[in-house]
Amino acid sequence: MNNSPLVSVGTYLGLRLVQAGMKDFFTVPGDFTLVLLDQLLKVPDLRMINCCNELNAGYAADGYARETGFSMAVVTYTVGGLSMLNAVAGAFAENLSLLAVSGGPNTNDSPEHYKTHHTLGEYNIYHQEECYAPAVKAVCAIRHLEDAARMIDDAIKVCLIEKKPVYLEIACNLAGQLIPAPTDSFLENFSFKAKSDERALNAAVAAAASRINAAVKPILIAGVDIRTADASESFLQLAKKMESAVVTTPDAKGIVPEDLSTFIGTYWPDVSSPPSCSAIVESSDCQIMTGVQLTDYTTTGRADLYKKDSSIKIGKNSISMPEGYFANVQMSDFLAALATKVAKNDDSMQEFLRLKVDSPIIPAAAPTDKLSLKELRRQIQAILTGDTTLLIETGDSWFNGQLMHLPKGAQYHVQMQYGSIGWSVGATFGAAIGSKPGRRVISLIGDGSFQLTAQELSSMIRYKVTPIIFLMNNGGYTIEVEIHDGPYNNIQNWDYAGLINIFNAGKGNGLGIRANTAGELSSAIKQALAHEGGPVLIECTLARDDCSTQLLEWGSRVAKANARI
Image (cartoon, rainbow, N blue to C red; front, top):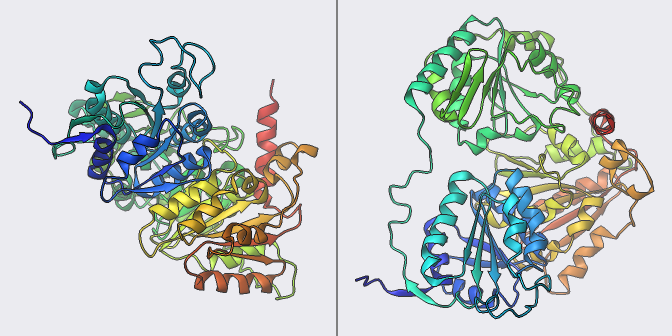
């Protein structure tokens, strides 16, 4: 007989989330979730964060997951869930542990064969899980009380193990029903790391070490899946042992500390930073591709010159090279073991040093000079510290972000695989909520992207988070202009700095500043760094054609790739 105290299904979910380390969750209330929210609010140490709409709640959960490793957004059925789906799809593409929770219809609705609100007006009311299925790792729909504890536990475990979103639906009439309270054994002695097949691991390490030790100029290429595989430490262990040159792919910026003595920059084919990275990568006779995701964006419209037939490709749980394919080999295990078998070879690093051209020192603009993108980058670079999280929106911000040097300890967030414009506003909010005390989020956002999700500025004001948003106002969708221009890339100008006062409504403590000149930007940044109790938005007015040269090159190549027949 089970003598555990009883709690509601909603409270059970909240207690499990706290056991898993979650402190905050995001929501937009709706009638199918109200009882569930009541029950979640009973859980100590779990804070409810309200958002302006469901899409933004999903984006906020995305940003929170990047900072903390695990997030949740709770919305109502269909009208909320389908609105949030785009954000959940982005989290799937970006390998984030996001629990997407939806209230569901009353369990009596379907058997009664009666049409239900917030559905498609058909008698089959369970359509939302079908929409979510391709964008999540698992679907868990609680429509029977006896399934509740098991499904909640499974949903959280899959979410954390797979680092992918999971869809959890809780029927509205079950959220307040009582079940035995959770035990403390939920995550005790539970391993989220799969074990490598020892025989395959040893064979893969032997083959890779032989290839690396025979190479003239091996190079290490760090990709975004290093983060997904929790393999950052073992990658650094290998890099320090080999002393070969190390580059990251653009979506992996920040994974490798940029003060590492052998870090040389970002390989992004024709728009690499610095440009000499390309020559070092492409001339290497042993490219060690670790967690690299090859996409049309990261390869500049498929313009990469990776030597795929002769490289060592290290995936999250498999290794591929000319010597063979090795399954069930975990990246972190492989890298750590490989570090004990390889010799020092710094030839690629020495070649980089011979080719290296010191970046020109960008002189400060005169205070009265019209603000330029180059001066904006210079001033932002000067305020980055080890306690900065730099969050970069899709667009020209990508390329400006790549040109920034990250001090030791700084974090970097970008959504390059999914590339959903507007992501950054909600993600900035979520990252700021999830940030540790003393860490400040600094975001680079274009005006076109900002217009999609601007409402979440009001949530930043409501919860008194303190990000600094540099809003680049150049009158349109610049990234799309460089891929394929047309009148659809023009937008209505807003008084972006003035929006802060609208959202403050006389009570909030947000700060909006417009900077038209270099001197005005310098003054705005000083005010922003001293400001407390709310976000700061600095509207930076730029000429429409003032964009990075990297965007021009990248845009032309992506356009060519898009147009191929």
